[in-house]
Image: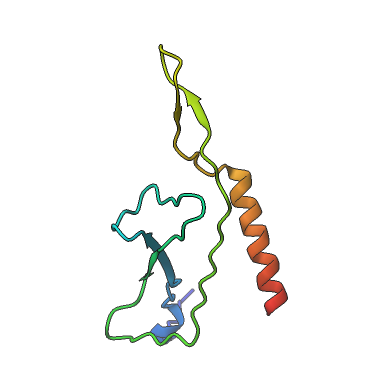
Length: 118
């Protein structure tokens, strides 16, 4: 039995996968602090926002963004006094990190907003 070879060339662009463009949002306060951004009751919060694109292809393939949406979600958080070690004094604690259900709630609200807008 003989094998017959048939030359077949597939264009390379069929097999080049495009990377998913993403972005990273940085928020800093007036002092340039990224951690522990907070504001006292009754005061305004001044933020500087910076969006950095990720997975952008090389300069050989320029990317043109037609639209870029940035949706911010925030909620009120309060400091709760906590009892410190041995002397049982009350001191102001730090803000607690968001729990998983907070993130799920936020994503749900953003999804509903996106579906109503589209």
